[in-house]
Image (cartoon, rainbow, N blue to C red):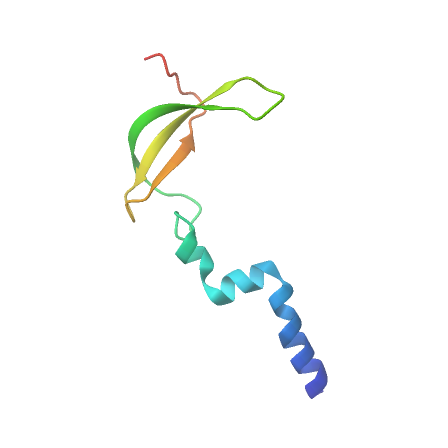
Length: 83
C-alpha cells in the first residue's frame, strides 16, 4: 500500500485546485485575497477597448480595494462615461 500512497501523494500536485490550496497562492497573488467579493473606492472612470473582432469601449472603473490597498480595474455594468 505504500507504493499507492506515495504515488497518489506525488500525483496530487498535478491537480491545480490542490496545488493552490496547499501552497496558499490564492491569498498571496490574488488582489481579492482568496475571497469572491471586495469593497473599494472608485478612483477614476476608464474605457477599456474590446478585443479584436469588436470595436466597443467597455465602461470600467479603477478601484482601490479597502482590505489591502491594491488597485484593480472593475467592469461597471450600468456605467456611463459621459457624466
